[in-house]
Length: 315
Length: 281
Ligand SMILES: Cc1ncc(C[n+]2csc(CCOP(=O)(O)OP(=O)(O)O)c2C)c(N)n1
Image 1 (cartoon, rainbow over the protein chains, first blue to last red):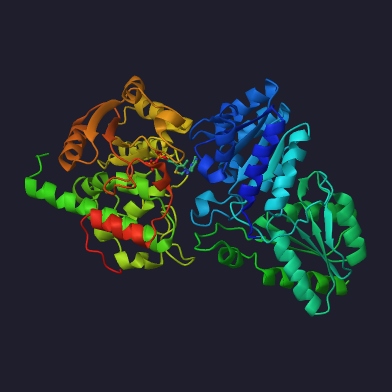
Image 2 (image 1 turned 45 degrees about the vertical axis):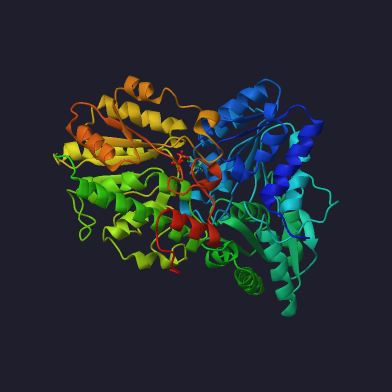
């Protein structure tokens, strides 16, 4: 089976859900051909609203639709929703607690051809700081699709982070997804790799490499960045004594920060963070190579694991 | 300013065709980029870079130069072509456009590419940034002008209109905004996605001097710019009527070609239609 992109997995699931649930409506900002909300537009034209290139407007219109009893899914580029429309998200979605579902597409570095202006690599930092918001980061296309009915069912605002690209397949269909409950993808006792989004598949491959070195790495998928699964993190800290976080996001403010906060307050444990260093990334020709060049390679994960384990052994 | 001679018109028409061919080759080679909006702006860019703008390719940071903001930054291919043909850097430098080490990014980057006055790619910023550049010129008592190229889809963003009010309040007659009015955006026609009409009335009501021209007619663009330059006491909007994908039959007026890349065969056909020798470049 060829891998489909995460955006396609999401977009098709939304069309399907809308067949059964008449309350689902969708919006876009002249990027329906990119986010693939065009599938929804084709199937449910009366419930689709393209507001033109106006992200803040889209968020506020969605707020109104939510106040009117609908379940709006807004679609756009993650960089623009999380920055240009952030005030709308903060005040009118999170503070006012309106039932808006944010499908933030082209996240991370996945829009590699368009470059730094289009990368969303601080969105998790922005979103994680907002009260009342649930932040979900699927690991692949199948998982993205599986989240759609769950977040529609959930009462309250959700930020769903969607990549433009396919990711290494991770999700086993049938696995129960629960907001706020991380998944153990692989058992291990020497080190824990805590992954989210497209980095999950890379962590599983890093765990294979570590296995070759005789290192048993546990792999956790934290699909929910907020509310964070404190239990699964602390259990891993106690049982493996060394952790690594891996995310397609700045090392500032995202998964690495969330895990560091959890550990340092409850159970200080060596941690090494894999993420985009504190700078803007260039345009690329190929997503995998760009990710490798931006500090997100499998080798970067392996090296981080070794760093974290060295720290543990010095204690 | 005097009218152009027919030789000049012919020469700039040739430049516009050259910019179209360069843009398509660059996009094809990189396997990424935005052909439609690059082709639609070819004559505008030819007139600006080869006639109107006071610039010196040997001094990209010259204080007194006219400023140009490509607010619709996705049309970077036509800007890079114009800068290269004008001598800011060799065209061959674009052979590795998009490589991680390259000075040319997907969208214009002022820190990396000589001749690029401002970074862009996120739509909507040009008018307000242009206000700042125009205010700076006034404060410094410099006579450079600021030119901004915006898209019609782009004009749907609220920030464009915030900038429009600002320019009018400060009577920025050293700010000339050109609207590339091709009626096509990413998802379809502007008149379907989010209608802009009556667009001239809107800008007029916002306090701007509005001038119309045919965005594919060198003389019409040049004359409109001349009127714009002599306007006093108001910012100027030039509505350039254009066709997205202009010059390549299968790309014209088709939103598919907003951001899709021609394959080998399509490139050859496009270049042939533009009257270019098809080479293996
Ligand atoms: C604020 C913002 N929203 C969305 C995008 C994605 N995008 C890039 S180009 C484009 C369409 C632009 O249409 P238009 O301004 O008419 O440009 P043209 O037709 O001249 O190419 C869109 C939606 C963006 N770059 N910035």
